[in-house]
Amino acid sequence: MMSDGPKTHASRQALDYVKDGMVLGLGSGSTAEIFIELLGIRVAAGLKVQGIPTSDQTKEAAREAGIELLTIEHADRIDLTVDGADEIGPNFALIKGGGGRLLREKIIANASDLMVVIADESKLVETLGAYPLPVEVDPFGFSITAKKVFDVLKNKWSAPPEVKLRHEKNSTRPFLTDGGHYILDCACGAIKNPAKTATQLCAVPGVVEHGLFIDLARVVIIGDDNGAQILER
Ligand code: 5RP
Image (tube, rainbow, N blue to C red; front, side, top):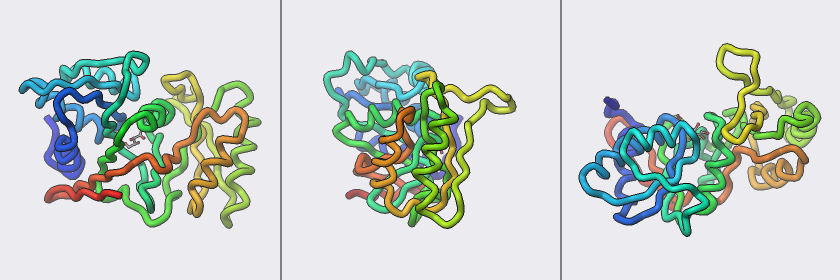
């Protein structure tokens, strides 16, 4: 049973954006899973929606919640995506990918009419970058790709960035995304111009996707101990 904390307050508020008949992008992470659980309660009460999961883990959570699933290939539209974030900066620029699902999350958010981000207050920041930026790379030549990613990030801030290959928990095995890629976690400090950094990272061969989500979220719902606040742009 979920606790009635900030993530639950944000998730419950996000249900107001869900209408009967919608096709929904279902995000990944602990906050998104609370949303899925609450959505399942509405579905059990008669709400009709179809969900497109952003990860295998989310697919399982949605199945358990009794939400009808749709593959992205069979969707003619996605009305709304509800997802969490690791950091939310100015203009709702985001860092995502803490859970390693950023590629599918970005494909689905980008294809959606509306992206709503749900989070607790700790995720709101003045400048992105305290959270290490996840960059998804092809395993082929990943150490060369890592050096190029370092070069993109190094000249911008005083301390040199740390670019680390993510591993499975308590293991020497590299973490593999649902798409079979590696993740580089890049601790680079303040990202002063996220849009420019995003463009530069995309230009590195071997980079499949990065965790900077620019101009995708239109609504951010921040939960706290007492309720939730809706921010829109
Ligand atoms: C997964 C993500 C998540 O949305 C992000 O990590 C936030 O997760 P949580 O809600 O557990 O804090 O981007 O790739």
